[in-house]
Length: 411
Image (cartoon, rainbow, N blue to C red):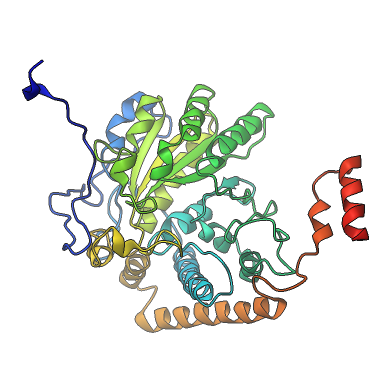
């Protein structure tokens, strides 16, 4: 055969690399308010276009426009803004704590706070959340004590997980927060299964789950999508497209050729694609999907188009794979600043109130930090005695573990 027809392998590459200037030229988005809001009973096959557009409510000046504008009392908007500020303050302190050697690992949600906080405020306390590792805002917006989150991160004597989980792998059944797994995408089939069980038992609770753009390449995600679509599970599947998995841009997972929301089209599932830095848009899309699930109309997949402002984790250096100015140049702005501006336009907020809220969030985190660090940080001797590994594993401890426990205690 002639070599002129030799095959070539396509390897997706980002448009900008370290040392380059951030380049978003050629990107286009629908204008805020342009996307119509369908009825919740719209057939999934009629919603194909929603996988390729972008639901936007706020313009960059803070005005709320269009049919997706949710009806949210000003007091609730202020609460949402304060929860996002608290989440960012918590992230900042815990990131620095890791750098100071007080814990081994941390993952921020910088730039993605609207996704978790807005969604938590829509879902009921009885609904079950199956998060990934960047949804700490879910717990914070459900008023889970941040000192307990710190205890888990430090794996100290008051760690609710008793030292058996990596830092940031929280769990709270009371707060509807399913145990985080470091194995990516495993929470998606768990959420779908939980939702199927809820429907099968004629319950009223729905499930919601979150994963990153890179995790959509995992087999667990696709198996879960099949079950969710076939059985019309009352579940919301949230793909947080923050443009990067760890060290690789979203094109490696398939985002170069199409949107992540387009995956829902192939499964016959309702797709929505939303500006993840627009608190109002996230709130409205989640509200729509939750109403659809509660009406026995099946699952919805939401792609949240956002940007990871910080590193993937404390073990990652984004300067090695993206331009230094990319976060500042992100065309959809910062979720906190955008909601702040919206509230100011409503006459419900001002710069002094914002400064005070920031200071209050910082001080609340500082006080919790002092309390947690008095108990201990990672590596504190005796925080978790060796024999504690046998506790809370089986309702009735089998004989071989009883023997091993006796050997440990005897030693």
